[in-house]
Image (cartoon, rainbow, N blue to C red):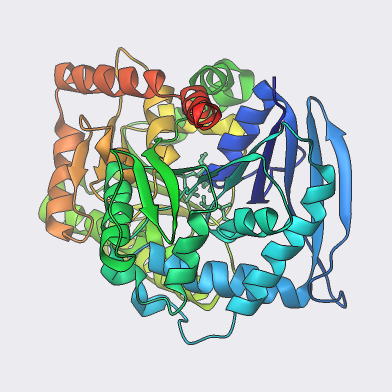
Amino acid sequence: MSRLVVVSNRIADPRKPAAGGLAVALGETLKKTGGLWFGWSGKTVPDGMPGEGKLNVHTAGTVTLAELDLAEEDVDAYYRGYSNGVLWPVFHYRLDLAHLESGYLSGYRRVNRLFARKLAPLLREDDLIWIHDYHLIPLAAELRAMGCANRIGFFLHIPLPPQQILAAIPSHEWLMRALFAYDLVGFQSEADLLNFSHYVQAEATAEPVGVSQFRAFNSTVQAGTFPIGIDVDEFRRLGQAREARDTYDTTCKEYSRRRLLIGVDRLDYSKGLPQRIRAFGELLREYPENRHSATLLQVASPSREDVDAYVDIQHELESLCGAINGNYGDLDWMPVRYIHRIIARRRLPGLYRACDVALVTPLRDGMNLVAKEFVVAQDESDPGVLVLSRFAGAAEQLKDALLVNPYDIPGTAQAIQRALQMPLEERRARHAALLENICRYDVHWWCRQFLETLAEIR
Ligand code: ADP
Ligand code: G6P
């Protein structure tokens, strides 16, 4: 059996709560498979030399964690600059927020080279290497240049935009060429894979060789769709534990006689939070029977606060919540409860279960695991309703949710109203269908499917 080596920018510290699909999913996966997890420690060395970093290797259960400290200048260019100021907005279809003219690319390349230099000595000949997400697209090419002949797979956790959007990145060709250094490239959805296929056809003057084999830049790569899932059993276990049950009880007690709606997100402009709050305001305006009754609990954890666009979205959200509470709230009822914090994972299932409706309405999302967690946490005999954006990767799988266009505020308000009024029988039928899909395609299925495909490639 080959050892699994996972590489990602963010690695989960078992001692701290994590918000973010990647860290949560990989943490669950590695607990099962064991192996080496290599990534950024999250720490910055203020006067460190660019391109240099200190590696700290330690063991946590079955997993060896190799955590790399980075120089402040590198974090600035590679993480805040290129990854989150260029790739994240463009890959989420937001050219308006991208700093395309910036000079961050050299820092991005420098840190990818540093990752390769520090990782290479830890590798064994038959390791299966699995690299994750947009921070590390060129890592395989760097490893290959150093002579690494291992199987290397790549999984993109975020969407891949259409070629016309991608091509706005000045170095798009270099970036896409870098994908061809992998043996297998995985995407979240068919839409992403289709965008990849169109890109290859349009930009690289090459043709797909087979259903999932693409040839360009004088090389071939296999690409496929591997929708990520959650650890259903683990989440259920959490739901049965004391903290989740206590959270359920206190939430039900505090909001008795109210209809509860919930949103749980990182505070990110891709999550459609202002649109969601506006849709909730529209619900109160258009369907006044919900006043003094419907309450939206919006938990939004701080994220990437040193990137400008994230500061702007926070201010916008605060002012929108304040306006709705001012306009509609009363002495005994606050329409929006906005919590700018991470909620302990152990409490999440209880919170989800206490809610009638989940609003998962990103403008664009690779997958969205909150949608899946909400469904799993429900009481099957009296389940809540999932309102889901058609622009989340999850919408390809979760067709029994109430699918909405989050840009359409009245349409979303209407769907929320429908969710609040949905008869028990319909709720049960939709929930059962959603749950079946989520259980079948859980995080272990995702991991197995990807690694087996990678191992079988000749
Ligand atoms: P993303 O990866 O873009 O953050 P996902 O919905 O795929 O979005 O994954 C988010 C993960 O982080 C989920 O497991 C969710 O439970 C967790 N999470 C997000 N926001 C919070 C929060 N405010 N408090 C606790 N956990 C959170
Ligand atoms: C998304 C990305 C991950 C990232 C996470 C949290 O899920 O796909 O790569 O780790 O957001 O963001 P952060 O910048 O805090 O790692």
